[in-house]
Image 1 (cartoon, rainbow, N blue to C red):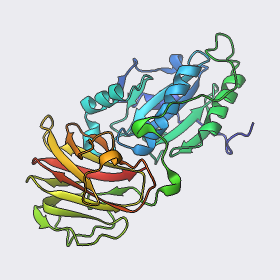
Image 2 (image 1 turned 90 degrees about the vertical axis):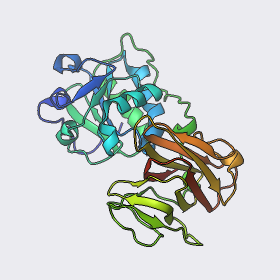
Image 3 (image 1 turned 120 degrees about the vertical axis):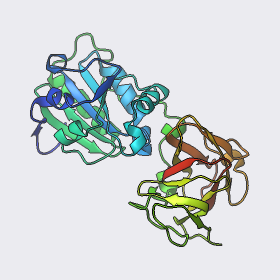
Amino acid sequence: MDRSPGLRAAPRGGVAGALAGATGWFNSAPLTAPDLHGRVVLIDFWTYTCINWLRSLPYLRAWAGRYRRRGLAVVGVPTPEFGFEHDLGNVQRAVEDLRVGFPVAIDNDYAIWGAFANQYWPALYLVDAQGQRRHHRFGEGDYERSERIIQQLLDEAGAHDGADDPSDDLSEVDARGVEAAADWDSMRSPENYLGYGRTENFASSGPVLDRPSGYAIPVRLRLNEWALAGEWTVQRDAVGQDQPGARIACRFHARDLHLVLAPATPGIPVRFRITIDGRPPGAAHGSDADGDGEGTVSQARLYQLVRQPGPVSERTFEISFLDPGVRAFAFTFG
């Protein structure tokens, strides 16, 4: 089987040395060198609002369950992108809600990220039983190759006895909801952040930075433009509103539309209503809105707002917040 070019050592001090930089653990006591000795280790860097990671999660679950007794150790490493992802309560809720059953090493200080010289969410690294880094994958996809390399490394380690599943068939996954594979053939809209630090294609006038200001949505939006209406504060990493009725609009071409949202004050929910081309979404609603377009921002996370069931075309999405106190971080698509 083809090996990844450029065999590389794991971080100085080994995988266990890198994991010593974790600021906390879920689903496991801290994993040490004796725990990982002679095992194949899969390190997965993620952030729980990342749609690309969410779509890879069914495969990680399957591999962790199928190959555990053969010696595979899957370790999730959430490294925060947004400020609210530093909150351990938010991460723990995500681990539970998303059914992440393998060990999770919290990387709030980016120590593990730095030990691997990582630059991506998600990022997968495979380290063999001798501590050599044998494979990496940045972003989602290429699952067959990653699983074949897992099987190869376990075979090299002599991990056969007591196997959960000694066959070399590929794992079957049941990816549903937000975890379902993207419709790549119809997706013409890229991820876009809303804070002024990284946004693109902002169509309202301005923006005024770091203080409240009024905005209007243009009569027409071109593909992948977005705009604000009402009073908003445009911040480096997000846009925030404190007045009910404020809106966000986006012209997009994709089956799915997601928006990373958070209540400005934890524990105080914010109701919203969405439209597609000025009408309730009906059957095109996502898992976080109903057919009338109504839903609630109750936690800091990714919200699936649109999933078109039929032919995908260019549409105008709009979300109106019925209560004050929401922050919006990023659009993603699928």
